[in-house]
Length: 261
Ligand SMILES: [Zn+2]
Image (cartoon, rainbow, N blue to C red; front, side, top):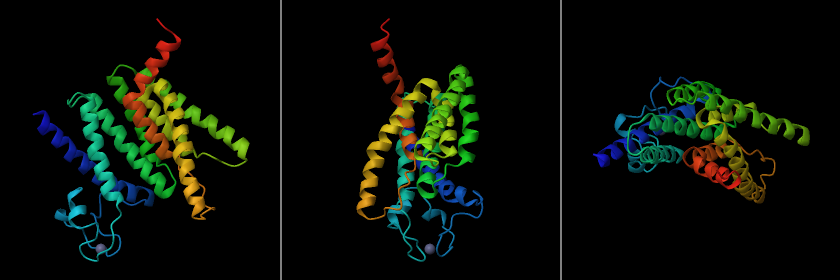
């Protein structure tokens, strides 16, 4: 039964991933997310249902449009697989039960995947995902009886990035961080509470320096020196996923080390 449920969650994750691919493409372009149905961006040919099966179709078609042979971005396969595995992991973390915690995890995970890829693509963090997400996070916390923690999390999360943005602006004399990052962190604060939000910011800064610095070196070598923008959204998202699932372990460790009972 547990095995069957896991297969179901995996398939469900891949279907949601397929939907997120639509959001990632259409949200920043201001297109409707329901109509028209999926179509090839080059030849506009509608994609039949049998060519639109998550993960499977991409592999069968070899990542090309059936009609015009146009290459389909590997991102489609990546997002579908990422969601399938992410959902499975969330299911495992919630003890193979369809609990409130499971639905909270997959909501957060799906939002962060969408935000990250839109930020990489378009360098913008979509408000239509983050702002309603704050309300959803507070709603989940209401059912989990920790609204206050979630509420403070919104202000601690958003506030920290607001401060960094201000300091950065003074230091580099230009806007170093968009308000989208502030909203993203407020959204994460609503889901993770204030303690884990602090952990997210520390981890995100660490990833940005480590991974972002590496990417910057590669880009410089390719002489794309003008392109030094680093989207911060993916680092915050990665940090949030880690802090969401394992943050309490780290926080408990620190509290027990510095304030032994
Ligand atoms: Zn085509």
